[in-house]
Image (spheres, each protein chain N blue to C red):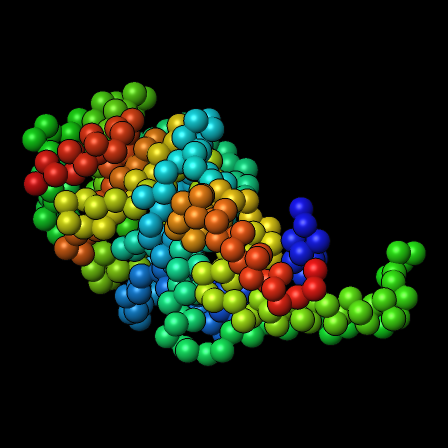
Amino acid sequence: MSELERALGGLAWELDVPETPDLAPRVLALLEPRTPRRSARGRWIVALAVVVLAALAATLAIPDARAALFRLLSIGGERIELVDELPELQLRADLELALGERVTLDEARRRSTFTLRELEEPPDRVYVGGQGTVWFLYGTPEATRLLVAQSSLAPPFQEILLKKLVTPKTRVERVDVHGSPGIFLSGKTHFVLVLDRDGEIVEDSARLARDVLIWEDGGVGYRLEGELGLAEALRLAASLR
Amino acid sequence: MHQGIAFRTAYLLTGSASDAEDSAQTGFVKAWRALPRFRPGSPFRPWLLRIVANEAHNRRRSAGRAYALELRAATTEPSGNAAPSPEGAALAREQQESLVAAVQRLDEHDRDVLTCRYLLELSEEETATVLAVRRGTVKSRTARALARLRMEVEL
């Protein structure tokens, strides 16, 4: 290295470079889609579901650098936050209790405030959650191969918020779900928590979930959970009618 | 984690704190949106800095401001046993000021490559990614820029 190069190198830290501003708030504000204003009625009816994602293996880990970029992301009525560590959770063994009241498919159709989309294959079990979310379960609660959830994002349910806390080991991908913006979360398993209308975690509501595809279409939030892979999840999303 | 290097890159390329902040901020947003195109396993830092640098170039050109960097205010306190004498420090300071002035007079391409290689301490490979040129171009531009600098400063 020549003397000139050494002098240039020495210059690097002699330059008056302003202190780095905190860019995160403005970046996040630009990334976060606008959420609908809360209606007066909605304020008390809010019920939140929190999905806490914990990849149990590093094979699907997102790069550390991606984690550094990604602290918060919102889509539809859902929000995903990156955290360094997950809270300690007591897992609920009973999936049925976590999903809500078990009903017939006809009953779910009748109670839903929007037209339910259904797969060609009828679900083995149907549940209606506390905030009106309709769950289709394929398989059994003990051996579930697919969960389909549909939630109204229209008033008074517009404040329903799915909030996900992910570790850097979870892959989070923005995807196009047949023209609608979506997110595909993958990892070995993750936790799902239900919050009450005050935003408090419902005791013992934590449960395990797998890969999740989330998207919003026509004021309805959709979720597919299972060991699907992105291609299969997108295929199933297209066949929901 | 990458805020510091992103802002520093943008500042050294634009010479303006406000342009640097805007460039880094826009760079992060664009990088987030471009993440699906990021190849897993490739180095992330130069990929991000390339996006930030591109924003910085755009702002620098549209602002049309003169490029200006300054040295930090000189310290009057000796910094340890190896501190130079006051005369020596003054000379070093003078050399640094003339070097900064000479760097500022370089054309954009020469200045950018020296900024990446010496002020940001990026490797040739990283510099090639950030400036979106071949590694060979980094080598040739660096040699040319150093030759031009040598004509202006006594080092």
